[in-house]
Length: 309
Image (cartoon, rainbow, N blue to C red):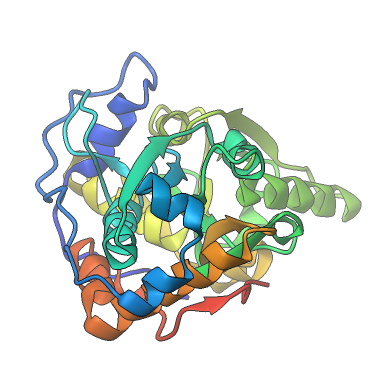
């Protein structure tokens, strides 16, 4: 998949890095230019009918996310608490369609699925790929189609052109992501072929992985194209990173559908979220939100369930 076309000049990634408590050497963060307000959208009575009674009574749809992961979720200002991003805007619009408030709750990435299974959160919106492994415990309402690319330092100092070039290199990943599992698999593949494996630097947050590349501790990060392209465009006004968009990267790492996760037992909520998303697609709100962040290329035409591979 070719990289998403970035139309905005939002300096959100720097904000996100410092807001997540990254390395002490993080540069000062300017304010994000994009508004945090999501398009309101009209309520959808048919979608509301599908909403479980417990959520109707509470008046709140609890959304678990992990900030930062630009452009999916970030903060509007350095050190601030007001979220913005694709997932935040869509969560607010979905809540409006369902006639309830949507909270947007910061959660450690590896704790999000357990929080859904324990009933502490209702849905997961964290720029997450819909994968067979995750579908063992969740269902997904798919809302974007994305690929993978390599993010490298500006000038590509180690000359990475293809996924095969990662042999013997150090790669930064965020723990508990699909990228982590895939890079471990790739490393084993290299070793089986008699080549050097991949040295993997694992970090609990997104910001640390970016800063590892910036500081030269890692040669690259393999990441969803939407997030990687956004980082290239926004961090240090485009002076920090560049994108290696080789077809072999998506072929190796899979890519596919990004989804809104719902507990597998919560079938009523799954149908309600699917109906709300379809309503947002139909009235144009969904595409408006993606366009706001310059990632309209990843849009889907229909809200479907469990289409990831």
